[in-house]
Image 1: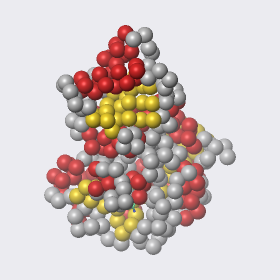
Image 2: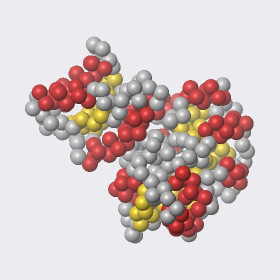
Image 3: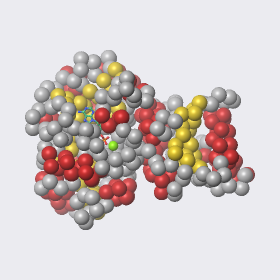
Image 4: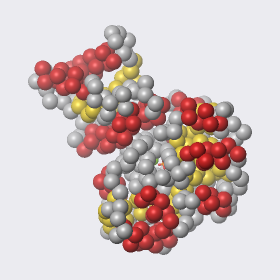
Amino acid sequence: MKTEFAVLTGGPEDSSLYERAGACIRSGGLVAFPTETVYGLGGNGLDRTASGRIYAAKGRPSDNPLILHIARREDLLPLVKAVPSAADRLMDAFWPGPLTLIFRKNAVVPDETTGGLDTVAVRMPSHPAATAFLLAAGVPVAAPSANLSGRPSPTSAEHVRADMDGRIEMILDGGPCDIGLESTIVDVTEEVPVILRPGYIGLAALRELLGEIRVDPAVLSRPSEEIRPKAPGMKYRHYAPQAEMLLVEGPAGAVEDYIAEQCLGEETLRCGVLCSTESAPHYRARFEKAGRRLPVFPMGSLKQDEEIARHLFAALREVDRIGLDRVYTEAFRDGPLAEAIMNRLKKAAGYRIIEITGKE
Ligand code: AMP
Ligand code: MG
């Protein structure tokens, strides 16, 4: 299949692209589109064949449900059995935006879209290109992240092209994503809402709005026989680079020393470092002193962890592109997005975490 790559300019000439993309969705095709979180791989969410094609294009297990994307709040009502009052408050506060809600589903939503569950995930994105595309489609668009299953989520149209070229009808290029991490998922089907996946909208903001909220145990620890995630996607190996990834936690100085020594001590494997812009010069100086040019990926400033979130998945893809064998990553514990960033890093590292004690 030939994949059309369409660059959006933000001007009036985009409207014919949206029309084409919308018509493609209505006729059962797949279109990747930008959102404020990551790029989505869209198909008609009410068409079981289109959902089947999404799973096939991604190589995704079909028990891992898709998120329905809508452009207008009223488009929610036909999809769900009830809208609990907590959901109303969450939508008032955070829609359109990076928040996905889980509802009991109506029969119009096929089992293929929800991986066989009797609940459905719905989100209203805020990216203007996503809104224009969804309005042109005129149907709820089922869209997981537009990456091959297991690979890091795409935060640019180039990432989508790398994974999806030849597998889908069209890619809408709206530039790099602003947030760079997938939406926060909250299940509102229970008496007390539950966070199933952390994201840009954090626990503190949700708790302030709702009072009581729980966090699914699988968000905090490694999924196991005892701890089964309620968001089925959270159980899969995810976001992971091909390289072996190790997450190092502890006082900043001790972490830098440990990572630099490990990288320099390794002679056969090609190592690299994911870090903050503050610590990157320290690694570079250590490597230069040793006469080694090992790759260092500064993702953003510790004072602005939004930058780290925005660049995280691109950094993981870069690790693969240059073919590293092993990558060490610093832990990021202090900023407002720490929960969401650490959730992705732990999963990418397959929960291989090294705890260092020692000097600050
Ligand atoms: P992705 O769009 O690739 O981030 O994947 C969608 C995520 O939403 C996966 O982790 C799914 O498991 C989760 N999800 C979708 N629908 C449901 C649902 N009905 N109940 C719980 N989690 C869901
Ligand atoms: Mg995904």
